[in-house]
Image (cartoon, rainbow, N blue to C red; front, side):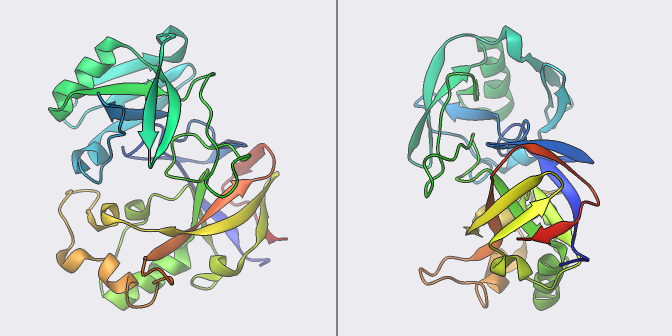
Length: 265
């Protein structure tokens, strides 16, 4: 493990939109700062995902000291200042879990409704929002699918691309932490690791869905449902689900940055 290091860091402030690549990040108990802290839902409170609306992948965000700047695919933009958000909360459903989420404001709801051509609302994981992970209810998580962070090794992506004969992009798999210097799928065998100031527990493989089949630049689907087709030949679990990457939970808060060594605990 002495040669394994942190090679990239990614946050997705608004769930299902394009990620932001960072040189360093603060890790709190809910994951990387600003990661999946905003979410879109329909008027029934069910969250809106790029699984159904892949155009979300072309919405870009930029972090501000007090909020988020959001740019639509047509170049139009809007800025969210967290101190100015409504103090009203509403339930949003993320994979069967009801979360008390802070309403951002009607101007944001109207902006996104016009851009996506669906009635929707923008919500924030505010001070009154609480959610635990599926297996460890005492461990907090914001609007991520189930766990605070996702880790993938560059070697695992290389292995998958070689097997499929297609060069896949790490953006298809939306990791938070990418590491380099290990064998393909070495992360499957890790129990706990330390990166920078933070210790992480490796708790569960990540099951993959149709979002991985979209080209992040063109939004076109890869032929034959790749990379799921190739993953299914050697990365199925006992339930028949396809796995790629590992969900991890931080034990403590601290800073991680590019080049940090990954220590096996």
